[in-house]
Length: 533
Image (cartoon, rainbow, N blue to C red):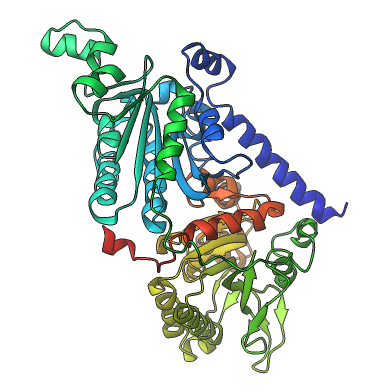
């Protein structure tokens, strides 16, 4: 094993260990309680709901892992994309082993992200509801605000009335207070006999508010809502029967508009995925061959680079991914010789910005979805760059990407810094999915650059005066480096939702294949999110 491969394997192993702990939710005792209550856990429900052998592409697993003293694994909700009855669908499942499935502030963010994926890609969305409602000590980050819990119900309403995105809600445990509007605003509501409860207030609240003494089953159980109130549509005998009804309702959905226009059968990559571990250097500042990365992800056939000799610091190519035609935009690293002189890879120059803008517009005309492989340190600065019109060229690159209606998927390999991160379809531009390798570093600049930006003038004065660096300044410099090391870590980005998932490089092709299938599932151009909202 090479030192590089060993380094990548260690990073992947760290992520795997962390994810395994998070998937355990509230732990064995809470899982056992769930089983004693006659219920499956959220992850068990998902495993039985999706097609046998199907991949579950989990979104936001690391969200909030480093907050709340570790008491909110996955923010108490499991979200992701998988095949149900042969078609991609979004799944949202409350994890009742984590504080009875109560909502943390980040729970809201995860549910909203899942709904946005469903809206943007016109995918059915399944809610497996089992939640005690708002986590009251954190209500100020849950209840109010533009992106508080109300936004969930806004998206519910948009999907029902405007977008015609199918929503199926299964109340498989508690569903209380305002949270009851999530299933109420869905197309189909299923409840489970003996374990479901849905109501605006539980028995204790009702007793305190109006003086009624009543059991949970009589107040808001499955029998009440399917036989008397008419709020719910189907009653299932148990979790397994409930999941079977969901699958049946998915089978009943109209066929995707692109069914019958099958993707051509793809060919394997030109090179083995195993080689990906050997490509990324242990020092993130060192170069590597991004074409070697691409050759291990896309099909061997039909790869064609666009303008390979012009502005080579940006690689633009048409390719196939498991038979699906796509456009690929990637940053080349290292020092490159060009007719215009030497170039620094990972930097966007005026010529490369205009090249990418033209390529994106070409893919837009041809209807090719785009894959951005990010390893960008920013735009070029200096007198020559400004004279070349770097600001205008950069604006063209950003504008063409922002206004492209074809699906866009992002994979951050290494750096994602400065305005280059934005121009390479950063998260603020609503890409369909955002992924990163464990080697990814997302931030405005690297730590050493930040040291110079923050402390450079003070250091220059000391140097000019021939004075040593005082201990207090040394401490502040060390703190700056430490802060940036933490902020730039891929896990930090994942914990705050800046990427949908961290993925093992070896799983890249499989993850991207499912993500592109989901993004292109209905054979239509991407709508702008602002038009929807």
